[in-house]
Length: 109
Length: 266
Image (cartoon, rainbow over all chains, first blue to last red; front, side):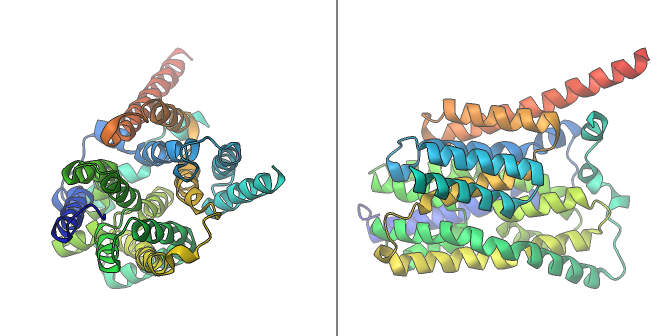
């Protein structure tokens, strides 16, 4: 943020903060009493299984820390996490398995 | 197995009035839910901490002072968008573009908000206003799973669970950012701390992938996210999520129709 003046940086922080709050509070706050049509609920049920992987996939395939170079140990870690997560339904188990795979492969190669 | 997958999601009917009985002992219900939520949220302190620390380190390295880092992280509480803002401004992008890009990443929160809203139907405005602040990835993931697994729980208990889950998670994120900002360069650069966020996001989603429509939705979202990664302003994320959602719903409807046809033919 060194390029920004102090005032501009504070304005950016404030703007993102207010806008983000409005986005996340939106339906909970303003649509509280209303029901959603069935087609909307059917689509919304797929939000977690699509948005989170879509957010994570580019981060895993082209890690910023490696300047976008694909790292097979990360891909393997993600694959193990997803597999263990689907099979065991254990979130922390999935993270532990993925991290262990990533660390083990990293130590080997 | 197919029929189980196709049966209507119990959480869908949560908005029906009879599903939200105003329990007489609603205070106790809230507290019981809250306690369960805190227990579920506790392990996530360890999960969000690396991400928060990473943000503190990165923001400080980008030349942000501690006050700005802390206000940003406690006000926005959306790690990915915070990274987007910092990185784009550091790259010299116009501030307005950086804010819009960060906001685009956060549009998923509106989808979370919409899918949580039925559970807050009838709750007081100030409760919903505070709940809005708690709509973050991990709380949403935990709450959605709980609401799907236990549709019989009262509204007060579900809301209690939601707030309980966020209670350890949000402060942990803020505190970890402070640690990262203060420790800064003390964290060895060789530590691949950046791998924590994507792994966490996958681990949050994977247990919710139940049945064929979910699997198709997730697979399409991942493929599209990689294909559209080059699009500016995080449009790729939104396009990928939308195509995954449409795929999931489409497969669900198609499978349901096929099941109905089979039953009719038998």
